[in-house]
Image (cartoon, rainbow, N blue to C red):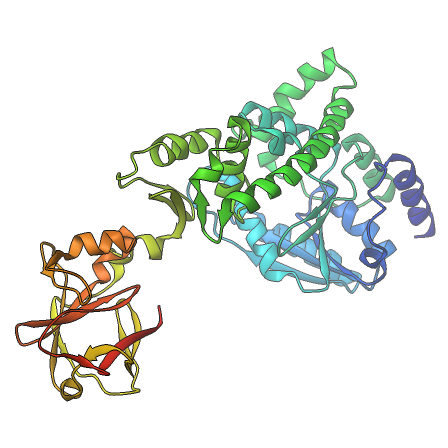
Length: 451
């Protein structure tokens, strides 16, 4: 064990990129580590080294993607290795969704990591130099920008997860040499040789061709990721300024957006579309947002779905909405016509929000209407209403437009009546009093207390 630790420290100091160890001291003195172990050569070496360095501060997670007939057996082998060394091991079975198998498997794996990691733990993964170079090239072939070419960071600080990749500057050849020297058991996954998969093809077919022409290609490509990470950090600083200026809450101010250069517009939209997802959207999706939504006519019903949000144009803003918000009309259950009774200081819930009857210091509804059965019916279109304080009857549609009630919420507008007399209109912006024989000074009004 002492020789292992000495060898590890020697190579670590000599070969790790400057700065990887310049992490807050608390990472090493206070934190514990969750080792992601697939049972392969790289992750078994990682597990062994961390067992030597931090024997009482590690746990292990094995993610079974259920894509191989032997995957459960591999998990048992990892668990047995841990049991012999009194290391806690968690085996998690995940279901990989349909689609790009490599991407969906990665997504399922990281979801498992996030569900299992504890507050005081850092996730440690065994990615190495060739993994890094492969990631850059595959991202390049897919048309990725600076973020994709930055590939994997040694220390990756995410919102709910911190990832450490301590072997990122070690070659696969050196890792293989260590594993043989230490006589570590490991698993050979046959999919690593299946050229149907992009990464396996790059490793088996592309790599030998490139290395035969450019022997130092792997380390050179890996260095490029460092430069791209610097560029990404600079870009992130600029993006933070642009997002703060242009995006408030969930809406993009198009007037401020249009003051940016075309390049900054694209980068800001790409970052906004990414939201809290792991990867940025494709360039084509950014173009669609620009062409189909931002550049649409101001009165057009322009919308684009980019998982998990809808991006909707309304006036001089583009709104980022959840599916439940944008598709509210589809999910809301509203009766065309119903009855209700109002009582003072008794809140009541409507589709447009929570209301409460309160006294009005100005004009309101007659008090004798309280506790009477009133009729509530949904707006169907074409209604004209004489709203209190305005001259004559107005199309309700025009009043809604002037109040800038979002189109995706207009189905929540409901009209309150007593017999055939319109008393007012419930909207997501509050209650609008109608001019009627039931209006009186110091009457009562439904007041919106919660949307």
